[in-house]
Length: 183
Image (cartoon, rainbow, N blue to C red; front, side, top):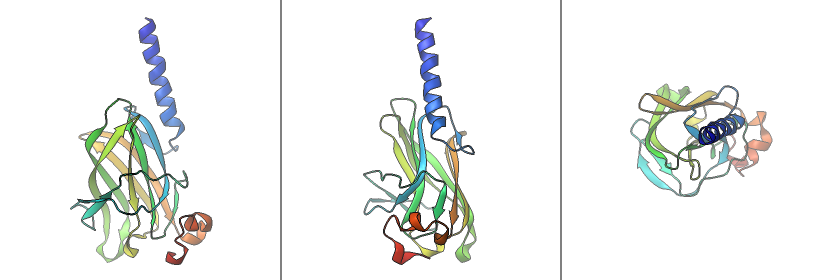
């Protein structure tokens, strides 16, 4: 009985910890032991991975996960700014082959409103970060951007960011040193 009670308390503690860092509108599966979302600065380098279901056709995988400069879900539309999720399963091992679907306002002349690529959700002790970074002017679409992580038929998390004009968040727009790139 004591072992069962400990397990239930541990499960509730994990669930509370996940919920404590999730926004009210986020969906976070109880399978996750860690969920954090926020805004980040561009990272140099990384490994290029093919991502045919994106406009660019590739994504970058970074070695060192960047820290969030804000945990707000408002994102200034500035080249070099990114937003995303640091996540880990409650288990000791992570999961690769997770489908990340990013739904957003229509981009430029293409009219594209959805892009997807595969990613990894790490473990609680070794989480992974998945983010979208504004690299091209055509990506700076104002409005709601939703990131949904699924594995098979299971949704692991879903969160929404709102991209706003840089003038709406001047301090955050300038925190990464990209003031000369304001759009």
